[in-house]
Picture (tube, helix red, strand yellow):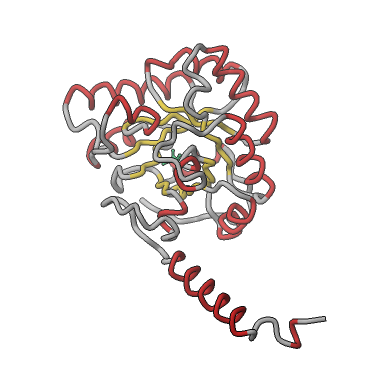
Length: 273
Ligand code: KIV
């Protein structure tokens, strides 16, 4: 049952996301990396803002998410937090900030919480990083898991194709999802996996499962803001729905501005002192 009963004034917390799942209210989540965008998303009523390491792609122009640093994630997190009143803000732990050992993972998560004032962290991986996640959780830091296509492992996968189509990988994903719930994660992102597998995970878990390219059976959906707004035009996977063509709007506005400057039409008298 879906009851879209979004309360646009109440602060979203990790606990509230679980309550939303319990009453069948879908969770909306988008990425943001700066103050102005985060403010627009928050005022529009988005439930969760993810300061994703996709900032590496859409903000910095890198081919993968691997180059972005912990300092850069904290910078983006800090900027986003200033624009948000209601949404829950989660910051990604970037590649290289948690794989070394659990203490490194904890130190990175603490820096994110202390310096950006975000409310939770997200981390890619399952059983192989269990101890790191447990260490972060033990410090009272809420953790969201991320399974399926985990872009920080792109060099191992060698492709951005759909994950867990084969039985063995699907079985590991289910085990990892259950483990993440058991150790205390408040939610999980499932990226680019078959819809029936994601639906099964969402049904078997009590914590919210947020999908991206994982079908409609999840408890919520996340997209990269630049993709869904049509700012990033070079990315058109099957799962992406474009809600605007902001690149065309910007191109048109900038072209008219150039024309007006060149012709001397801008600024006119009323735009001058
Ligand atoms: O970094 C990101 O934007 C993400 C989403 C794709 C879930 O992790």
